Length: 218
Image (cartoon, one colour):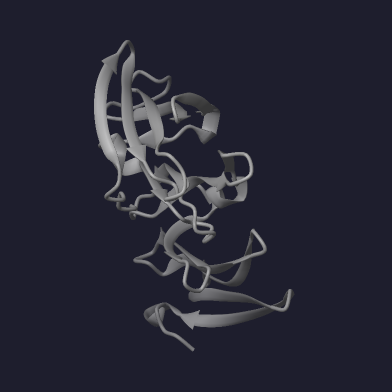
């Protein structure tokens, strides 16, 4: 479902203007055993189709130890759109809970503040950041590496009565669902669907929720 994470203290930022946009720079550590990585973020305020006050991240160039490591290009619906400081949209954080920080790039923010991110997981063997496309569909809420859990939430309206919340766990490098709860409008009330997984087996539960108590728990 595509409609803020704090930055880590080891990141240093600078900005330099370029034609048709800005070249923004930050340096951060992915792991204490590795040299720092330098990220140059190209932001374009004249990107096609943008409303006034919005900008787009066109690409991110990554260097380390004095050499070019990779370039991440964005196009179409995958282009991150920002309406504030660019640095609020990008962070380094261990999201896949392997001890190495990954690159998070915020794609968009929903009407109720829910946010979707591109995740680029740091790959120790190649030394580059690899896209994990399925992550972009999840409205990220929290990362809990102690339990290797990711929690998600999106408020779709009706005073928060229409929503989807999820819990996912990293298992052997893949993010697998543990529990997904969603609620949608139905005649005279709401329908709540709870899907849970145990040992790979899915169990579904449907509940009728009355209109005047859409936040009740059972």
